[in-house]
Image 1 (tube, rainbow, N blue to C red):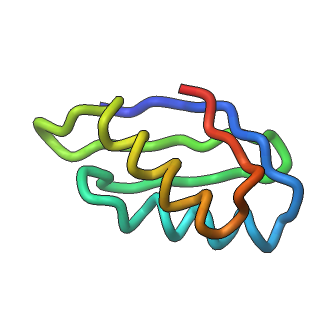
Image 2: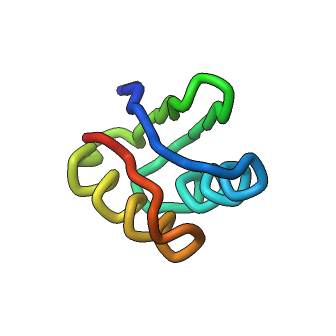
Length: 72
């Protein structure tokens, strides 16, 4: 399953680090974050709960930039 989420991030370098953080979150098969469009496209592993996975992904990203947001 693939989903697209709006994000709020201020820094392109941070966005790149956040993409890596999302990609390594359990349940994520692949993720592509675009700083230009402020969106992240996430492909989930089979059987993963997208809401639970993205809650963890958001927590991982907040370690990089605490004022960022992923709108679920």
